[in-house]
Image 1 (cartoon, helix red, strand yellow):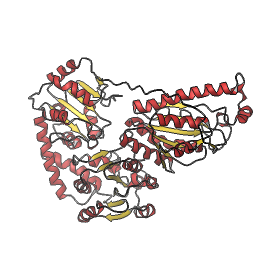
Image 2: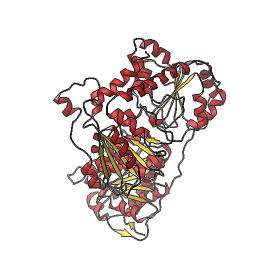
Image 3: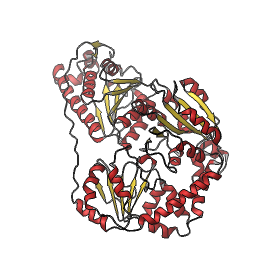
Image 4: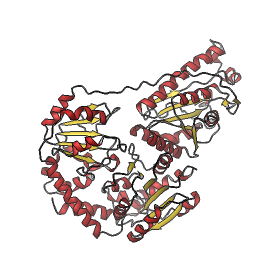
Length: 588
């Protein structure tokens, strides 16, 4: 086996191996050659080559999202590193352990006009779990050290300086990788290399000092009975669940919550939680109240005494607006690492795994007979009936297409939702409980949905479906530029020729300015991209053909498939807004 001749490159590879960072996503370059040699020569690592650093980082994020393990991205020096930033920010807010390994120029070549050289240290400092800025070896290319940085050796020998440098680097690598493993946060490790970069040796020249990972786990809740007493004495309890891993919560806890008449459980598509008593379309519950002449009265009826939240970030703007105005007396959040005060009412953070919390909590709580659930369940049944009526009378549109798509996804699929209108339409419908749903809700950007889905699909046991809008798809089309698309990877592309979501936002007016700079109207389709990347392509523009196309779409094939659905740009917003008016008019 070959090793880079540069000790620091050997050290980084040894630490990654010791901390079980097995998946390495590499973008080509020269300055990162020592790392490329180290990772690709060692059969322990699974290495991926993706040219576009922005896409590479989201691809790695998808693998980490699926495997729950740190994944490394490796790039050359200069602006290459900056392209990682969108995925780093997403990883930071979604608690995903992304390990950024950036090769750098020597410190004495920064800010002197050298090519592909920027200030790489602390570049992610506001969105990172830890930044490790390693020190350059003095034992490699020492003649250049004597020429450009003699001060490094002015008070010591070369051997002692190198020993001190390795001690520093060992410590920084341990801290950074332990943060990634223990805190589920992205980390950045900046690694300066002097030329020559491509020399190899047959035996490593260094031994790494590996510190064990100390993960602090909270297994108990102080005064748990005190909180249970507050729960038992409260008449209205609301449980709100955001992004949540599939099959992560014990079903018996779900059943206990769902069957208590004083509890309503609001879930989002991204929560991956299911029960017949759960409210899975939050906006369909809130919108009729907003439009009611008695909205104040109904909102006060809906206002919970206790709000219990767990999972990641929330999609629904309506529930955020409601809870920020009608604040609960108590807001408790369950999360091992952090709690966001999303509704400006957080009163306690349970730093514990949700299963462990409910194991401790539920023995102390008693079932109530209050009518909180009964009243709002009647409203839910009403809007579900109205939704079915509305779907039968509307024309072909984004909403109608989503209705058909959701009903026809095969059981067991891994479903990735792009952001913006895609994930919001998904909130209006009930997905089968066997589906595993993912979405980049940390920053809610459209910029890496395809790349993330492709990465997550790589290790998935089941087939993967990406549902995306046109702007998100074309923006991240480089997500298809790799050799890792599985044959059972499927993409449904809803193309309404622009950013249709902007049409439902306040301030929309029909003008050239709006269509150019907000909606970004276009006439592109995915046919040529499909041909370029070797995907099977089909196009539909009406409901009957959509049903027929979906039958073929999910059949096994020798290549990934794209089904593009054209919907009317100028009516989608009217149909969506009309839906909320329709379900509101009859019962409020």
